[in-house]
Length: 248
Image (cartoon, rainbow, N blue to C red; front, side, top):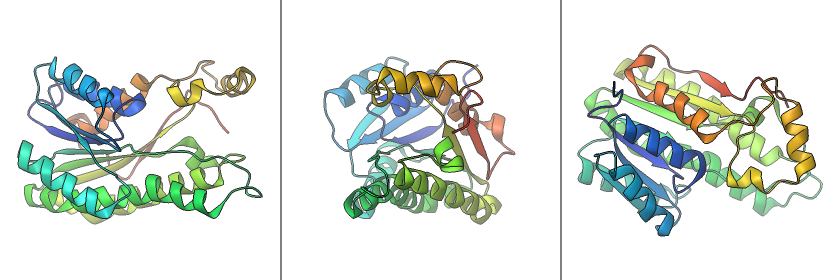
């Protein structure tokens, strides 16, 4: 059974990691997939080919999600190409970790722009078309760090906590138009970013997870699939942790 047949999804930050897994999962369930990243490169071309292999339409875009103008253009271009947007996944994000003592204003501002302002940008840009069609699912990528905080990640944690408050507010604003907005809070997920961590740090994180393993991008993609599909038709304003039961 294909859960997203006939739907169009836009996914930001999708060239690799969690975003890529979501794009492939959605395609496997029949969705046409538009995706963006800061650059259109070999990773974008490869993902287009992998998504299209499921027999659905795929197109990658170079777009800076932290830019209001880029986000408006991206949404307009996707609607012009695909006809509509049913699902928005705000996945673009970065880290610039440091203790507050050494954290620069530039790294604070950059993380806020890329992680939090991007969610405002894309959600604002897409809401008009979703309101017109009286349907839509907006999925925002938060983090368990946004729920519980974490040493040396005050900027990242604040940006991800902001996404939770934003998601709950948008769920209330747009619910009467049959538009749902939810957040996913991944825990320690095996990606290129976490693979660069020292082995002792990885082991400490895994030790703190009741399921005793890191998550995979596919674990997060499965939750995104649920929130994008009609299976979650009465679910909005929620934060779903995909973390193996970990606590920070």
